[in-house]
Image (cartoon, rainbow, N blue to C red):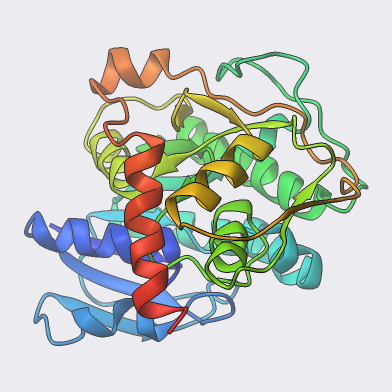
Length: 311
């Protein structure tokens, strides 16, 4: 089996590359390193079944080799990134998805779209089921990412219905683990970096907004199971164990044995008040649910940050 992963040098893409190589796949990792890093996959370059290609998927990609499955994971994904890169974010959701669907059609490959819990916006349903259509502000600061993913989902379903392409839409909820960028603006790497430096841990709002945090190894296991399934409806992948952002900050402070104070800043516009997946479909159809609890996952992530980031 030969897999192509766009955004393969990103946080999730690099872990997925490792996982598939361990499963015996050949992996073509495609990335233009806008937010990904060669360092994330440098340890894979000596593997004869791994190939790295520097390419912007908003431009067509022509390949001679057979491709069995395409994982389209290319996109800025953190608020800092997609607000700094609004046009590339929209282009990779639209043009990038279109190009990769065209390649999948040519190669008769399975197509797996990395969508996001952000398609639900600031949800009025809790927890969020796949049938929920969302509460998204299309012209707000988060709209470039939310609507890029919503459009990508529509495009994927059009190719499935019209061209009979074997497609999958995975809606990824908050995921964390080694290889997250310290400065990407998301809560886990930001809090860990601040805690290890004994700097104030900055919580937005009063910290009562909730998130659900899934460890990266659990996520890629779910993505793989989905890719070899016969399901075409969207599937939520995430950890249904909810925590407030303040609880997360306190956990990280304790595990890191930090002297940091917790400080509060103004909540960003359109920041979701709640975020928690209903994973009934993943449990039933994929026999999947997360195994790594938050304390264990944070301990592993903090240990990595100590070795690789805070030296």
